[in-house]
Length: 193
Image (cartoon, rainbow, N blue to C red; front, side, top):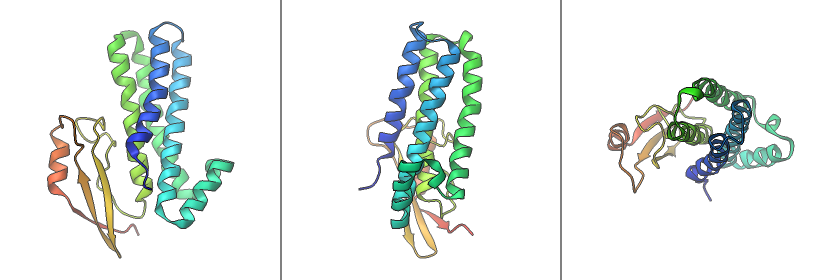
């Protein structure tokens, strides 16, 4: 059964919401908040990577199983590099967020914290379809909604070429970019060399 990337996002969001609520209630320092946010980001992106690896192939399922036992060291070098890049990008955003905390209202803190959850969807999609040159992925931050939508994408493979299909989420107001991507589907993909 394919992974629901929205479920990965929601699990990550739950952890982020817990940290945010504790910070706003004054039960957590900004330093502790940063540590808890970072831990949730790392767990979310690691889970997304493992799910993407597991769905690529039978050997991917074995590698994902090993990863659950021994950690990310069981991932391929490329998958570890992709995971490290995704986490590194989010850490840079988190640093700016923590520095801005004193200037933000509680509502702004909640809204900004939730942005980190959507990015796990891009990590899942890019890992799941790592053999293909994807032009973009849901949750990658390249849309005005910044991945806070329920749009999905999948690759329909046919040998050395494939079609990349962007599907709009069902029950939401869409940003301007997501409908354009859906209307432009399918996109022709080439295998990575």
